Structures are given as C-alpha cells and as structure tokens.
Length: 300
Image 1 (cartoon, helix red, strand yellow):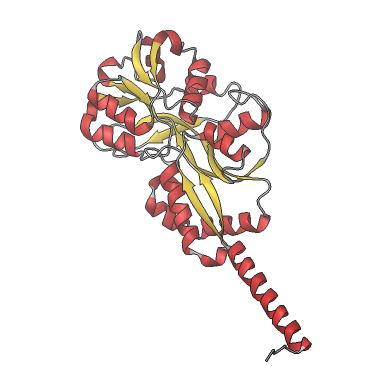
Image 2 (spheres, helix red, strand yellow):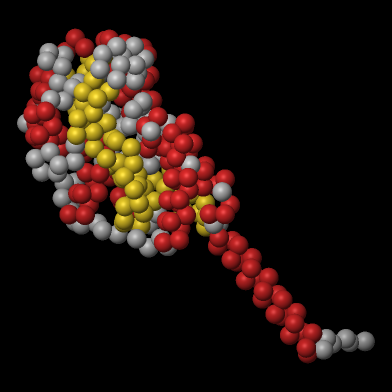
C-alpha cells in the first residue's frame, strides 16, 4: 500500500531541512580558517604568530580560526598576501613603505593590504666575531675583506633590510663581504662552527638564534652598535629607524649594554577580509596582550 504525506506536512519537512542546511552552513562558515604568514622559525615573527593563532583557536566566539605558517619573511609574506595564499601577515615597516610606493625590492605598488597595528620593535642584530671588531659599530663590516657573512635567507626581510642599510652606509657588500644566504638558526650554527664570521638577524629580542650563539660563544661574538651619524644616514630616504638600547643580560653572557637600531614591525591584513573579522582579531590581541608578553619578551 502506498502512503503519501499530506502536502502541508511535506512543506514543513522541506522547510525544516532547508533550515538545518542553512544553520550547518553558517556554523561551518563561522569557523573559516585564515592564514597568518610570519617568518623563519629562529626569529620572532613565527613564535608570536603561533601564539596568536593559538589564542584565536581557543576562542570559539571569534567565529574563525587562524593558522600561522613559517616563511622566508617580509618579502615572501607580501607575495603570499598578494596571491591570497595568506590573509594576515607580519612584515617589517620598511617593506610596507616599499610595497605602497613600489620601491626597493618591490617592483610595482602593492596596496591590497591594510595595517592593523604596529607591533614590537624590529631590532637590528649585526653580529661579528669579536676578534674582527675595531670600533664596535656597524661600519666595521666594511673592513672584512671578503670574509663570509650571513645576510639572511634570499628574498627575506633580513636580506633586503641588510642590503638597504649597507647601501645607506656606503658598505659595498659585494666587495667587502662574501655573502652567505641563511636563515637565523642555520646562521647561528655556522657562526658557532666557524663557517661564517657574522650574521644579520633583525628581530625582537630576545631572539632564539642569538641566545643560542651567545650561550656558546659569549664574548667571542659582538652585536655591533649604531652611532647617531649612522642612524641619520640610514634614515635619509625612509625615516623609520631609531636608536635601541639593549640592557646587559638581554642575552646569556652579554655583560655590556648595546646601542643598536630598530624599526617598527607591522601586523597587516588583506583589504578584502571583513571588518568584523579584523575587529574581533584586534580585540583578542589587545585583550590577551599580557599572555603574548609571557610567551615572548619582544611583545612587551
């Protein structure tokens, strides 16, 4: 015997089914995953990015998830943002300026991102083997006569800012140095093993790679200072750098204060991410600032 539902009940079932589908879709959409691109694992961008993504994942009410990925740094981060392979990114302030104007290593303007907040200072760590130090400032790098020096990974923020600073100070890195392209961790290993005489590590202190190197080498390595004149030369085109005073004890066996330079890091987002998502993430960031500061001292 064939049984047929009354038309009114059939309509009700269809409505309920559509409601359930819509509700499930909305709930799935509420937890959309966004990508935050950071930097190398031996720097500061990556651990802070992982901490931030962990905070987001723990808060169901924010309505989305955030996955932090490692990268070569600011240069690659801009490409990932441009291609929508990442929606959020941490970049050096100078790269934001370059991207907006299409200058430096950025060949054409890239303006599809917005700044959420300035973050911690990006502190220059130009490290040199102590027996090669003469006056103790970054100008000592002009006297290396072809010694092997790590400037960072290719296409990284470290490489590009290092080149920019060398150019501003008249250091001919092609003639004065034998450039090696390594990430922060491999650079620290190479310095400890005697395969390079120094390394360029811009990041918020304490930097894991610098901590490791200091713990083993102690006073056999030196973080070079910046003078007022050198800061002024670096700021000639983009006035982004200031002097940064690093207290003794920032790193193991670091007994003397260091006066180096810093520029701002910037937390950015693609301009097609909704304002609600950006607001919720910004609120979460500031509401949990103390937690982030416990995870990494650079955010203090």
